[in-house]
Image (cartoon, one colour):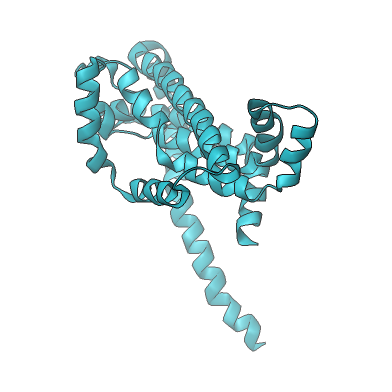
Length: 252
């Protein structure tokens, strides 16, 4: 009886936390239901939104795929090959990972200005592709893959790239899915980078566009926000099994 009584506060805390987490999403859905005119405003009356939606989707997809490719190659090298000063390299990546965005934003601006890439989509794509986050995650993932798999592929005559994409990535697909999903969500929600690296407001992605909507555009805000949730939610549902397996491996 006492155990059941003790469980009641824990259950209440869990329910309150779940309600706090789901509250904004539920309020967004409710706002879309009671304001059906927002669909007209979003799809027909405001073509600017659809342009920004597809432009943001393309840019964020390129960032996610680019960082996944770079991260897999870097993590594979650090996990399975004798890289000189490996510990120093990994330590440097972790330090860079801990730095706030504002620290690296100014150097990125100066470099992109020298390259003449400001006010282009590449100004958002290139710095995000070479983020240390994915490399650290894939290094940890590939370190847990048995060396026997790679040795068996070598005996079959597989080259380095074949070992990576045909053996290591499928074996570490939970880490790869995590990098892809988290990179896409981070790029989808970026606000500071576009405002600094893009001079033309018409090229701002969807995240900046939503932040600029005022209270007079409530209907547009609700439905635009709902559609902006779809890419991340669909990716999460698609990779849910890989993410669950990755979480279970980390707990072990």
